[in-house]
Length: 331
Image (cartoon, rainbow, N blue to C red):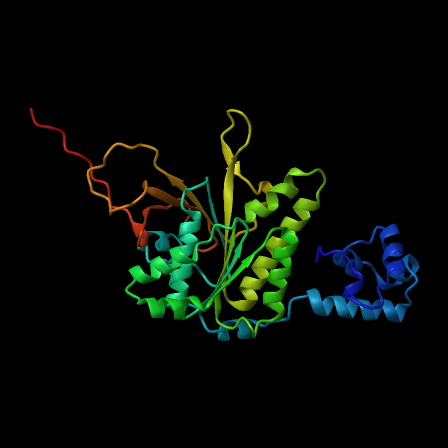
């Protein structure tokens, strides 16, 4: 609804009419729909009938379709999407919930993209489709293929599974919004889509949030609203990544998308990794990186504050061995 009025929205919205509306402080779809029709005919050269027609067009495009409680009850349930790491999946009640927006937040190289790859591989193995919107040009199909091979799939089977993975490079918030609108308007072409990955939303928003004015925050709000509506309408999980940045000298780290984004996701996993290089009491899998920890910081359906350790290996994301306390030596 925060979309700006444009000529392509409706033929009656000519450039002259848009200029008249702008001069009267009516720039967005929400502002136009919120005004009384009588007031609008005094704010521009449209007739009352034309104002009503424009409102009908805008309502049809931007309003949610009505749905009764019975319709919601009759909707088939979609099982959570498990990554294969039971402890991490358990934080979200068994995996990524359908219809929700999930955020992975953490510093660079903590494992956000690797978790996205693990869930993408799991969705492909389940027979679903995956759409990846890559803003960092770091998404590795070969890495995803390796995850699938480690699950016992042959090279031919991996090629067949990867045909259901759709990849798109996005370099701006506007391109991401266009991609999301295409998914929503062409749902039949995207039938079977179970996972939508945006890696990284922070990379797209950073230039806009650092610029003066509120355009960046407006676009971020639009993206958040669209991600949630697409997830709900298409019964998929929208999985986005967010970075941690230094707030002030000595002030610690904060999420890169800022306070305006904190309330948007349905679920938020904070990722961290151990910094100690001291050998632990239990051997880790070969080629495993440092132990990572995922903490559920926000959720609409699971208890917050719980955490799980995991490792990133050649086979994907695996459970970390449970550390055991060393017994004190006897005298």
